[in-house]
Length: 235
Image 1 (tube, rainbow, N blue to C red):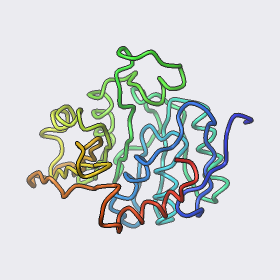
Image 2: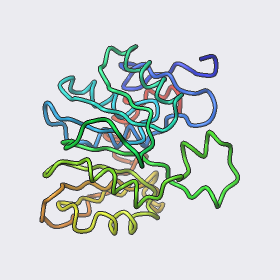
Image 3: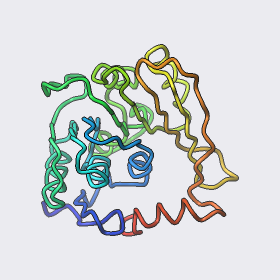
Image 4: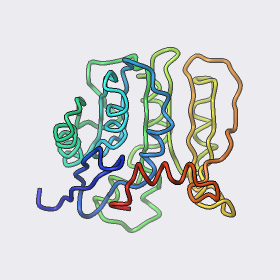
């Protein structure tokens, strides 16, 4: 693995091996992991796990979590396994396509996903970037598969670009309740670039729009917390 780098997150608590070129971990999976409600001894599925950032953080925060990570890219899966091993964190890793998951496990208490954001037909891109950042499976199918593996009363978390919010809400309508929408702003005078959508399967509770998360905020509390998580090593 000569084309990988060794980096750190969570103030160097977690070592992270990732590709030198192509997809590299950004702030999105770290924010998503931070927003997950940790309940002891959950069975969690990380769909489109990449090098395992979300799974590693959740397992580090609570070792009682039972983590399963799925990704279509064999290199990402190898790096996810390496990251779990190097950090002494147990994660079951599967190199599988989201459309045909076969892991003999169902009824997950929690499913987290940071899927590819963009339609590759609108861009000229390398193969590696296409797999990591551009849809090869529709958002509709991606969400359907996730929800099929989610237990009743299980929690679903997805981070995506703000332009796709209507699609996400359309695809989860009638399937999730207690929906919470978290807008994410880089700066308060800009439009939200990302959103996190949370929901509970089988719930009938109303939808809420949460106060926005502003990364570069005059109130330094959240910014400082994220900075400590990232440690500024590879962004």
